[in-house]
Image (cartoon, rainbow, N blue to C red; front, side):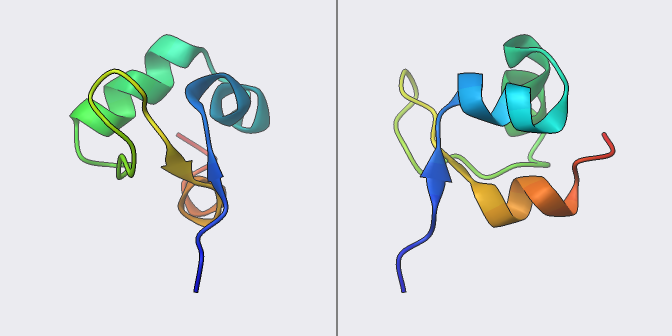
Length: 53
């Protein structure tokens, strides 16, 4: 099954936070990066689960 992956800009908009905050959440292990170090891709479903952060 393919995960609906989104970039940091889209993730930030969807969660109502900054792109920096999204990168911090990835670095803290709260969000999984399915891309590369320079090209972060977030699972939209995982983002929806922690949207309150």
